[in-house]
Length: 446
Image 1 (tube, rainbow, N blue to C red):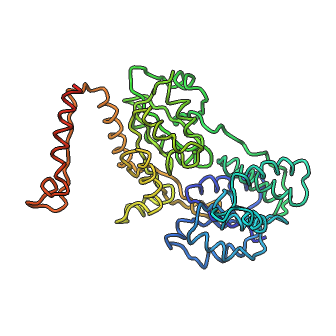
Image 2 (image 1 turned 90 degrees about the horizontal axis):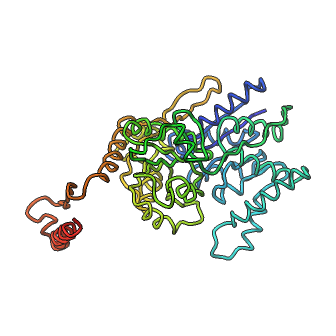
Image 3 (image 1 turned 30 degrees about the vertical axis):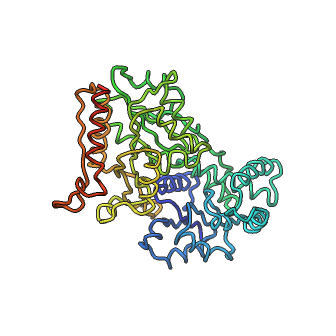
């Protein structure tokens, strides 16, 4: 057996390798495994020849790739006409989806037929329709576990194991795939352990709650203090974002109540409505956002984000988590964030009105002696986390200062120092007038 080759998002390596260790302990089998990370391919920091060799020689290939790029192109070159089993762990790009090959089931022809029926303006298949078909097919595959229906069921179940995250689900996913495609004689695994789409998480005890009142009673909520909400990921990225939530909560807790809410990204609106409002009014004084992308990038109501944030009327901090970049690389780089992280943790959150993106956590590399692989664990960056905690507390505290005692500073751009500063250049002549107008408005408001 040549074993398994994984090409995945680096931040998920901890859950993957913990699941591998649990698999080996449970079954007494050392699972041949090669793990590669997509961002290292994109940044040309790993051997393309080695990745190509491992992909080609593996009996089972597991892919978690979220778009186009070098990693996706390499997989297409190596796997398109290969004979090994290929499983896409997430519904990625059409280029990755068409590589799925499990037993007698292949998505290549199915997607080709689907694309021929689409209108010319569409790019790829209707993913939502395919997901609905797959959920139906999984139920049918359970009832009639033979032929193509069995393999469609297997693919959907594998994605559910991966999407819910955690070592237990990974262990059972590996057991499931090893029975089905590596022909190992193993006991039947438990079905995917599924969690609510959103809820409250206590980062100190690891307890999840579905009731805000129960959480408050268990954690010593002080109604005299302000409250800071933290929005972290549910599902597969829960553990990674919980690391950041825990570090921030530790720094904020002495001064404020902390309300950490986990949510799968498609359910962010519902989670905020459920836990950050009480009796129709906001019950938080600020929010720290530990997800990537815009607030509703994967939800049904993207247009509703700005009205929701206006109704909250509190600062929402983009925490700029580096789930795909090592802290050491970030420190050594003049650029800092990678282009994809600039887009997903700075630009896109700012489109919703989020503020002050400060990278506060990233990957730290460790060697796992049991599996022989490199783990990329998510760790807070202490000085950055201290900085953003201070900024959050100051923003919260200023809300309680009477308006006449608040002080506002205006910074005028001076990109060409000298006599012709921004305040006197023709393109900026409205700046002094704007400051005077604001001052008059402030005096009336007071």
